[in-house]
Amino acid sequence: STGQWSPRDIASWDRDLRAAVHVTEDGGVGGYVVFAAEDSAEGRTVRVRDLIAVDALSTSELWRYLSALDLVERVVQDRAPVGNAVRHAATNPRAIATTAVEDMVWLRLLDVSACLRHRQWNADGRIRLRISDGLGISDGLYEVTVSGGAAQVEQLDPEDQGGRLPQTEGGRAGARAVPSLGMSVETLGSIYLGDVSLRTLHAVGRIDATDTDIAAASAVMDLPTPPYCATFF
Image (cartoon, rainbow, N blue to C red; front, side, top):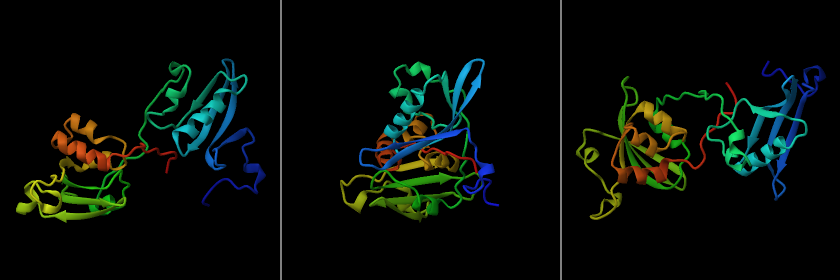
């Protein structure tokens, strides 16, 4: 069986669940929340089973709805994005507490070229990545060219003179140098999904690069919205 719930199987329904949908100004669906109320001696708790939204505004509006429910002492969300922006929308930010931070996805890139080609990028540009791998699987020098949001990746020969010397966009005198970053494959895994910024990893010594190269590469690689894994698999 691919699932344990069927809309036709009434016995499988959880009748304690309730749902709300945020409708945007243009009539679209900005997000939804599924929740259930739990009563105890300490009062009523609303436990969020699922909350998915397309942006911070829809997330904030869904939380506004939850926080306005009558006779509710607290709202608990078991899985939420790290750095949830809803804290900044609250009248009292100190009323929101994070009780635990857990890993949901670990990533280990094997085919660096293929992975980079299928990654989302923040802006067009060109960068070079020198990847070291203790297992010898993903070692290499990779040049990534992003145009129109799509990446082309070329694996260069690290022993080639052109691969070791600073290169410039277009090969013209005075042209802007191609940012070059050195890192381990583990660090690349942290960067890949967009969870940690290049500047943060550079600051703690995980990336070998100049400040200028980090700034240029960050504009291309760092994503505006951190990833969020909403479900186990």
